[in-house]
Amino acid sequence: MNVTVNEKLKFERVGHYRERRYVPNNADFSKLEQITALYEQLLNRPLSIREELERWILDRSELESVFDQQGTILYILMTCQTDDGRRAQNYKKFIETIVPVVKSLEDRLNRKYLAAAEQIATDENRYGIYIREMRADIELFNEKNVALETKVELLSQEYQTICGAMTVEFDGREQTLPQMHKYLLEPDGDVRERAWRAASRRRLNDREKLDQLFEDMLALRHQIARNAGMDNFCDYKFKALHRFDYSPQDCFEYHRTVERIVVPLWRRVVERRREMMKLECLRPWDTSVDPLGRAPLKPFAQVGQLTEGCRKIFHAVNATLGGQFDQIMESGLLDLASRKGKAPGGYQSTLNESRKPFIFMNAIGIDSDVSTLLHEGGHAFHALACAPDPLLDYRHGPMEFNEVASMGMELLADRYLNIFYKPDDEQRSRQKHFEDIIFTLVWVATIDAFQHAIYQNPRQDCQQRCSMWLEIRKRFGAGMINWTGLEEEHARLWHQQLHVFEVPFYYIEYGIAQLGALQLWLNSKKNWGRTLQQYQAALKLGGSKSLPELFQAAGIRFDFSEKTIVPLMDAVAKELKLT
Image 1 (cartoon, rainbow, N blue to C red):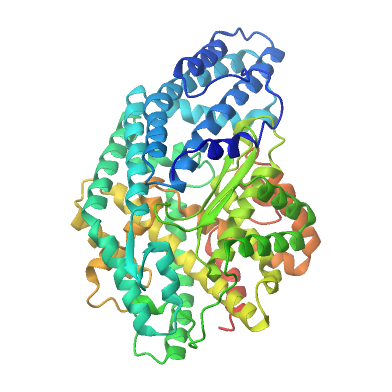
Image 2 (tube, rainbow, N blue to C red):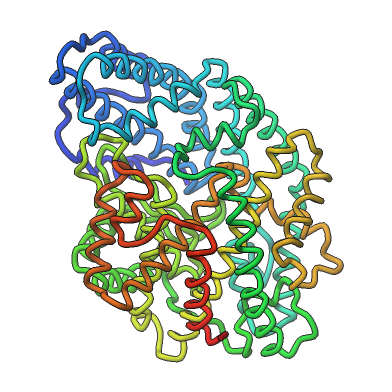
């Protein structure tokens, strides 16, 4: 599939959120000289009074929105078809020739703004977060890192390409690895095992490529941190991610609490499954199938049915949200079906000039596809809620709260699963969701602990890294599953987690947010209307407030200690009848 005129028009038709005031309508953002001219004009503009500074901020935000949307469209087109050479080349050219120049210009703009803000009184309540994050970015910026960061971005693209090309011959046809997942839901254990082994063998075929890819990424990231004056990449990344409200020590406390409180609960879930399946032990291909041997849940046959069903759920949750999803559908800003060449996973990405969301996923007709679209829909509603803010930096929140928007939507939508299912299947889906929540908290601890260990020991070789992975897996209950004879597959299981490759240290957010989403769920059981009201009010704040303030606005606590985790796990255990 090539990048056609129609593909480009799909994004162009979304239009501008409002008329441009600074960037010319005919500006061509594929031409570096036109982009740099607009940045240079801002750098040369005098700032002597508050009104000039306010206008400058808005013009800068408009410019950055247009620029960011250009890159987002190229990324979307590339991930939708990673085996299309033209799409790959367009994205690569943008990353290699345009982004590095703009990064340096952005740093100069940051310094110009702060110098002016020191001389001109600004509204602390409005710009406090904006300035705090800008200071951190200035402190970290080093010109030497621009080229290194470009190399990391290109390696990330290579990871997408490698994974997008993974297919296997199974059941008489070529299938993507996401498509293979449906066989793990089949009651026939032989089918499950053959499917699991086929997919795992395919991944192992590329283990040397992925090992080397990660080695290259790791070396670059370590050098980036040293260039920025940081001792290690962990410290660098925490500052780059603007994690002002918690520290690595808080993450370690989360790991310990999960190990102490959540892993035993997960063990009870796994043991109940083993008993129901009447097995001596569970193998990796036994963890997703219905434990009573019932046929897999089939919420839809065609992707259009998935879209329509979730549309009905969103309308049932809230008329405003339902109307927003209607608009997303009408704009064609969805790419949901799995296919050969498509990048793995799912995401929501905002077209920042039009201020409209795009949703990407790999639907294959299984239960988890429903929760994925509900999840990404939550992100989309978040983007739309804060769209009116003229400041780009405030039109997206911190990831720890962004994931509350999405995970919270999954749980708020839970009461309307009857749109897809009859009562018995509805309960099956609900139970699987709550079991997955427990697993998520454990898996987040596993991935986050692994990432900390990786960057604390950047000179370890691949074999040492895999051994370290297995030790961490053991700490968080990997022994519940029998991996005998599958040692190589187990040691490379982390290859499947794209966050480890592409967005290091971005994963603890899912654990923090899951705890916030569970609080929303409990609040909704007591007062549905008030919970929805607080949820929507918090989404509108975007990134204009601190994490504790955003959580408070949603009627929940920003806390991931034992004090919060214990009562939430008690509630989930009760829901699953494990008490």
